[in-house]
Image (tube, rainbow, N blue to C red; front, side):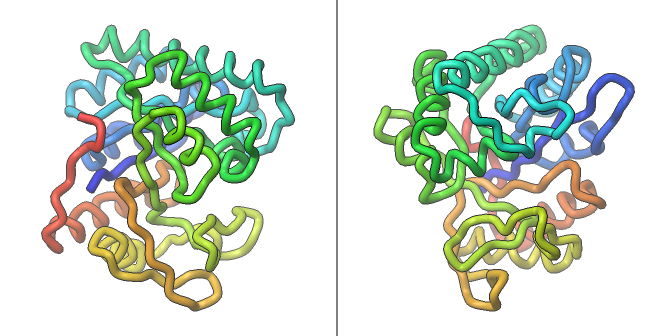
Length: 250
């Protein structure tokens, strides 16, 4: 099982999360590429530390929305979105290369991630960017999404993702952050859910029903309160349950 986290999400003097501590826990780092968060200095620092710790570097691409942290839908034209995604992957690749590593996968962020679950045009635009940049790059996303379906049709390797600290609807989609209880905070509960996900057991959805997920990678958000403690507890619980942790894109 792969354990990933969104990292490098500060900007200038503003810091968000503990990138250094999380890089000692996770196996893959979704590094912000400067559109929803991050800047060149942060990208360089996170890539260098990821290379040192053997953590796979992924490009976390998003809408051009620093003020909204990439969590607001933008009705961007497909060709423009393709160019934006290409730009972001290329920017991160430079810092990964300098660090002695490379970008190993692509994961959309925030509103873009949720939009391309169903938005065919935008999903196709992001797929096109990855194919044009490097058709060997795996892509990470929500199972059943248009994004993963179109990526698979384009010949890309798709990786199913689940979220450690997010509540799910009965349909297997994420509960909107605007609703109460959408983000989970109890490390014990989160760890138990992750073990269930990783071992083929069901978790409880927002309506109290049983939902079975089959992820290849589990995300612990770096900006959730107590993220480091949660990530450490999740890793320990998975290891104790006999689940081996390794990046899906070594």
